[in-house]
Image (tube, rainbow, N blue to C red; front, side, top):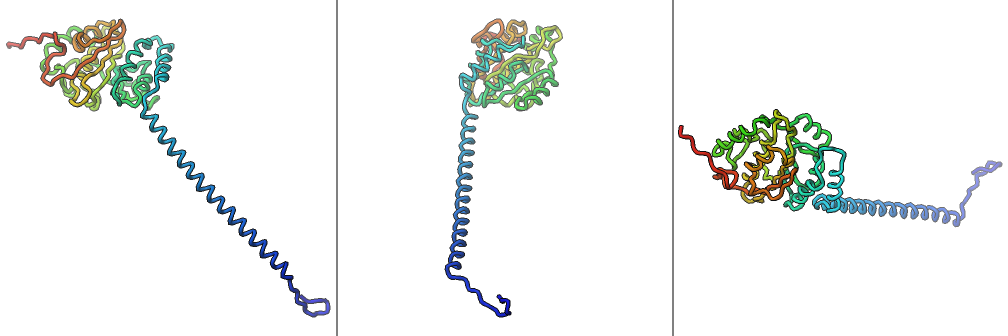
Length: 307
């Protein structure tokens, strides 16, 4: 730099000062490097921990999804379902009887229910990990239930029967028992008046382990009655494929009704009735040979027409 006299002077820094500046820069560089390393290690550890936790959660969820419901949970569900305010719900004893069969069913259990009732969500929950399908006569209610509860698999069916025609329909079925009303067949192609042939195709392909007839609703003369569901349940149970569980449990609710009792005797058979009360009948049916032409062992085949 220049002084006041215009002469230029050279200013030299002391070696100590230069050394002190280099040392500060080295300390700063070391601190930044150490901080960066610590940050990277923390990031790697956090990611590994998160991945491990996520994997553990996934495994636990998968294990829980595949496990049966604990007995305590089942008992609580049954208790609250049977003590609801609805006047149409099943009793504790009725629900417990069906629940016990579902628990013993091989997994996954195929459960077919005729009727959307106050127990609909309960049946879906009790058949945990199994296949549960509902059939109802009211298409609007079936659509409503599926929209409100997407986990519900519900379909509607149009019944063509009338409760007042009970005995006429039984006579017609007996008349054609060796043809379209035989006990072993694919109902999808059946012309039997009591056979339901307009259900979704896959309903006929599934080998049902448990079938509950709790619909359609109504006990007045023009109501459809439960003749068709009981007949259909009897055919589905007897038409199961080889290599699967040969037995099918069929429950008929409101067992005090004439149609329920009479059709139960005709198509589910008294020899298969293992338990009954005024409100619930429990049948256990075996698979039949394709050449079988009578539902019950004590039935008499109609005489062939001579015309």
